[in-house]
Amino acid sequence: MGLTPAPLTSLKLTVQRVPSHADSPATLPILIYHNVFPADTPPGTIESHMRSNGYEPQWRYGMYPFSHFHTTTYEVLAVYSGSAICQFGGDSNPGKVHMQVQEGDVVILPPGMAHKGVEMPNGFMMVGSYPMGYHWDEKRKGQKGFEEKIRAVKGLVKDPVYGEEGPALEHLGGN
Image (cartoon, rainbow, N blue to C red; front, top):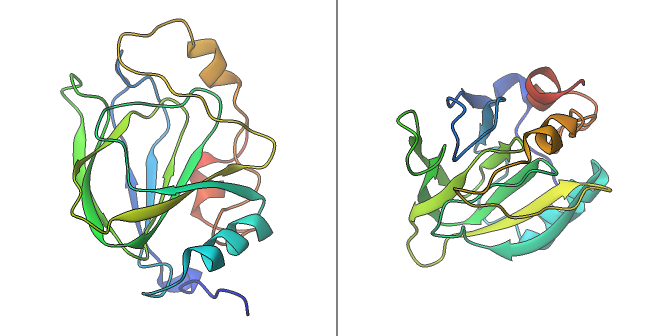
């Protein structure tokens, strides 16, 4: 049985721009699809859905409590349990933001977007997925010399939730 996300026409979407900073060199926005998956959707069902749209699920976990980012790929975080307050933009970035994510949400992070969990009650869990053929790395503040690597990452060719259409293609597609 396949997973049916919230209809695209009723999707509640947050497009959050965060200023680029030495500790978070992303130039594209964060996308949050709110309540896109029904409550109590099993993680395996989310993983199958991501695979059907060209994304490879690679882990189930909460979010690291330290600021980090990836220079080689987009990251798609599908929350399947609980809620958390997450920080986006790096610790010393005056433009950093704190946002709540909860069960049913999908967060799409562009390359270079620093993120960490700030308040993560027990039970907060996500599926982490990446576009097929891309492999994630982990960078932390103070590391330098990868801006070219971030710029070389191609735009998304499929939306992780909606496939051939969807906000990710509008905001993060192309290149």
